Length: 86
Image (cartoon, rainbow, N blue to C red; front, side):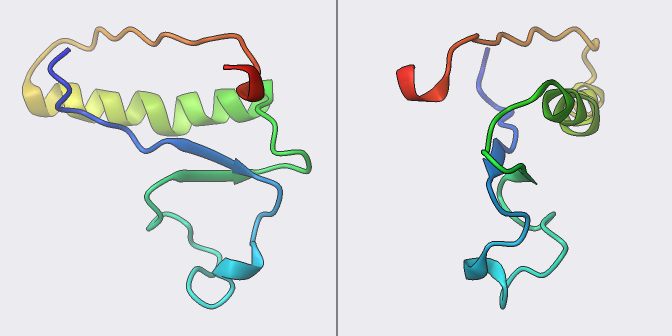
């Protein structure tokens, strides 16, 4: 609740390697300030959400809890609406 932990946002793009990134960002997107993924329509799918949850959210929060010496009790609140109507 203190706001001292902010995760990288998940960014879903239509292209795995957009033209604007060709010279600066090759295959490694880990240096970007977002967690990058792509699919044809740039939609969140169950597979993409599960991948983000297990590979990004849980490990980041677990490291944060260890560093702060607090128990691993988290609450993730999700909204079930499409992006253009929120």
